[in-house]
Length: 527
Ligand SMILES: Nc1nc2c(c(=O)[nH]1)N[C@H]1C(S)=C(S)[C@@H](COP(=O)(O)O)O[C@H]1N2
Ligand SMILES: [Mo]
Image 1 (cartoon, rainbow, N blue to C red):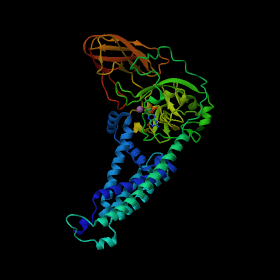
Image 2: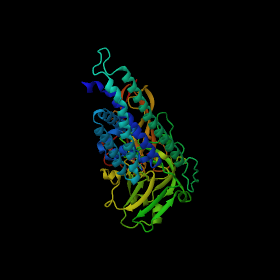
Image 3: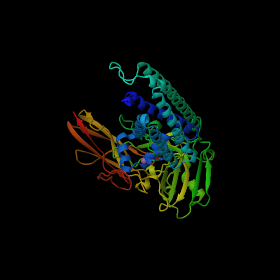
Image 4: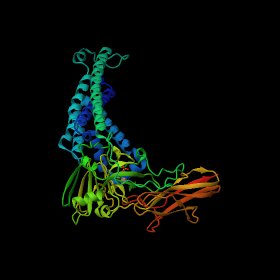
């Protein structure tokens, strides 16, 4: 009975657990900000989770949450940590040792996650260890503050009057005040360390970015876009995708910030002369400017994971030839600052196409989210086998000897972009007025080029759409068609043909393992 009366509602205990975890994470974030932001326990666990996630779950996340998949993952993680922390807090009232052990175990999980990252250094263990070393005492201090004071416990009546259940009002007030004081102190500690961590990270990000950097003019500029390549129709995506709306696909939970002054690109492996280049050395080389449309292999038929930009960079094939690619090397295994890898066919990069080590995008310094200081761009190949962002290492090797990030997870070694087309005007389920209207969209078959786009209405005959001009076969192509819309529901379908005469197949296949196939179609209602 006595025990029961002394026990405080578990709310206070749960909140204590949350506070202890907040303090632990605040201290850990500060340590990570000062050492290496990637070593933050939350980010390390989140990143490990991304790498361990089976393909079907990742596909589901991309399909369901799209560009929000990372915030959703972080939110889920924070919720899980909060639930554990609250449970640890409740447990701490009766079983302080077990609770402390539980908190320490969470720290241990984060430590293992941090150390198992592909780009880990031994000091990455410190933020998680600091979290445990902060969280456990905070939990115990808060527990003490929840306990009734010893002298009071002795003087307090063993049974309370029915009108005032629980300990004496005086006791309660004193305990609450102590608990409040301790809670505020712990929360203050968390806020100050967390706030400092934010400030340190913000300052570092600002210093690492390319802001203030002026890129040299290209020695080989891109030809101006042919007039009319952008049809400028309402509802149709623009020919050039602005940097801020360019799709982003990568495994990085936070955008890696690589200071360009410290950046190096190492070219090694099966080469005659390994080289290491600084950013200044890249800047002093002749720069090419090229129009290249990038596409993600995860793009479903009719989906938005494709974008077009004018890239500025050095000739990647030239760099490789200077290093001297040895016979037998068939794979360019590129690695990013955060340890991601992509495997590109040597043959593709050396066959004369405009493969770039890009440092500029649409007249701007490469944005951090798109790979600053430098990334690869190879026309005609899906991004996962060609477009490594934040690239720091290029190793010439063999497909038979080493596998890249997605290839290890079952995606194809060789992944040329498949011919695709989509209807962007009218939108699915649009209600449009009867009479003359425009059907328009985008088609792509990078490096081969789009030769024809055809549209059919309600399974009728295929009709040739009008093609907008394109600067090169490495870009997508806009198309449009006049349609005399009659009242009723209609099914519009599109298919493209590349310059080799290959017609886009009708069979619908999912993106795994080398890109989706099938025709895009929309249903519209004409009134
Ligand atoms: N370092 C790194 N580079 C990467 C990836 C990644 O996860 N990490 N994803 C690749 C994939 S799958 C695609 S489709 C393109 C997307 O480039 P974007 O985000 O600039 O559009 O980047 C590629 N480069
Ligand atoms: Mo991708």
